[in-house]
Each structure stands twice: as structure tokens, then as C-alpha cells.
Length: 275
Image 1 (cartoon, rainbow, N blue to C red):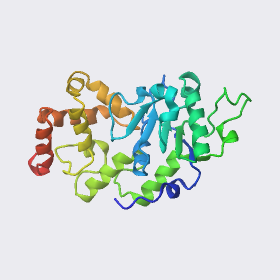
Image 2: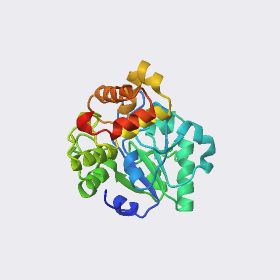
Image 3: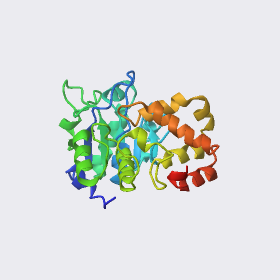
Image 4: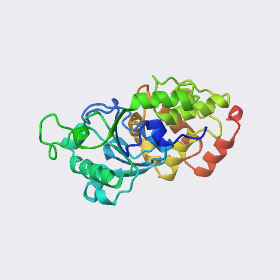
């Protein structure tokens, strides 16, 4: 992976407060997918503290990042440190109590000139309590930059990533970095299912990280008894495709290792031709 350019170059703005529309975000009552897909992108750009609703992650992190629950942090918004990514929707603002949180973080970001990235489902999020005039939104009252996640990720994938996955399959950078690694090590790289085939995954592939997460967080019972929860957790990171197949491949690898970290390390270090 080449040196990552400054975040200002990637976002094409020096404004500390940025609103990024991600069309993948949907109302919570619907069967939304990939609400967390932008997290690896911002993590690579140096921002890995994230606020989002607990409902999105199902006790699973595809990558390591600092998570603040939007429900828990609302009463202590002055304690969270910038730089910060906040993932929510207009529905989250108005129906799930995040309006005050967003308002306070916007005020702090503008006053302190610190990086606050609000990822949401609209380019003009509204805070009705603070902006009662119909049609008025955050972009009317604050000096913010407005960007589109699909445009940003497309450009980044073209310029800085050598992935065998098409952007139309996923705009989750973690998957593309895994594909890139596999491609450079002559391993399957052109589909998510092939990337998560642990019998053929290179020793240094990013796909092993998820298995260690399960072991280190003692999720054996979850995996054995509630594999659909893992499938659903993967849906929060994956736009399309059958996440159950990937979940099954994770389960197979963990069961081969009896959910033991030492055995997983040995399995990971084994030549793929001998697994």
C-alpha cells in the first residue's frame, strides 16, 4: 500500500466540517445493508473514532476502530475527541435522539476548527429544533463542505488501490485491500467469496483479522448457535451478495482451530497448498 495522501487532498477540501452523503444508508426499519462500509476508508485516512447506532454492528467489527454509541454519547458529546466520523440518517436525527448530538458536535467542530465528518443519507441534513424554518438545513447555517461517498471512493480506488474487485461489487475499502493483497500473492481475488476462502488465503491477508476478533471477544457461542447474527453483522459492511457463505467460511476456519488462538495462528502460517 502506497503512502496515503493527506485527508484534505482526498476530500478535496480544507474545511474541518464535512458532510458526506452515502446513499447506502437507509431507514432503520428497512433491511438496510453496508451502513458501516465507509469506516475502513476513513480509517485509512487517519480517522478511526466513529459514532454510530449500536443496531448497525451486531457486536462485530470488520476492522479495529474506536466506537462510541450514539445513544450513550449523546449526554457527553463534549467528552468525545476529534477527529471524528459520525454515521447517522435524517431519521436518526429526528426519531432516535441524535439531533442534539449532531448540533453540539457541529458547533464544536466549527468553533475549534477540528475534523468532524458527518456521513448521512442526505446532502442537506436538517435539525428542526435549531432550524425551524421549512427547508433550512445544516449547509445553510454552517460553513461545511458537502461530498458524495461513492464519488470519493471511486476516485480513491482508481488512484490508490490495485484491487481485482469492481467498485460496483463493493465500496468497502477493507475488501478492496484484501483483494489487492491476494492479487499480489497469486491468490483468489475477484470475488468476496473467494477472498474469504481461508483454505487459500495468503498468510498476511487482512481477512484473518475477523477470525481473531471472534476468538478474542469470546464469541464461540454466538458463532455456534447464532450464525445468522454473523451473517447479519456482515450485512452492515457488505452491499450485496450472500453474506451467509462468507460467514460459513469463517465458521469453518474457526472450527478447524477449535476457536483457539494458537491453533488459528498455526493454521494461518500453514502454506495454503497444505491447508
